[in-house]
Image (cartoon, rainbow, N blue to C red; front, top):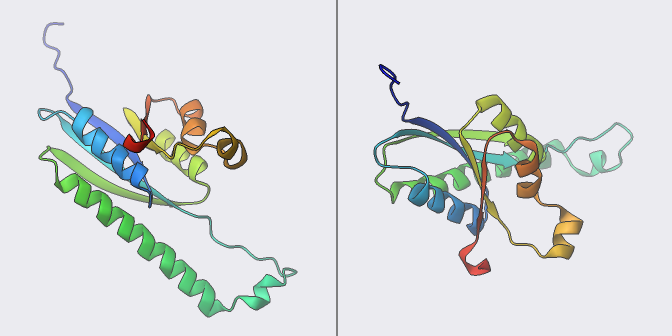
Length: 164
């Protein structure tokens, strides 16, 4: 088309967690999806487990004091920061023209990831695969498979190199 310009701006969401698989997915994304001549926004998405909610009838509410709950919340925040620092260390190994954004959500991983993708409308979602076998996947479910079915953008599920 005459007068049309090609938009080289892309947004990619990479779901990261404590696992090696998610860091492998991030490395794979930086090596294979992001080109040197495009301006890409890389969104690092970490999902903390849902907060603990107690009812007034729940006996465990009496077992866990406010101090324990605050300590657990602090641990969750520290863990999120450590995961993001680890992801940013992986990113620093690549010489790419990339803007990095951090997004930290809380809740069930598949719901938070799908809702964030719907809100941010990225070009691609990249996730690692834990490589669970049939039985574990049947019992625990697969976050990556669930997200691949639910989101509207392309999804890249990266196998852990040791799973190949």
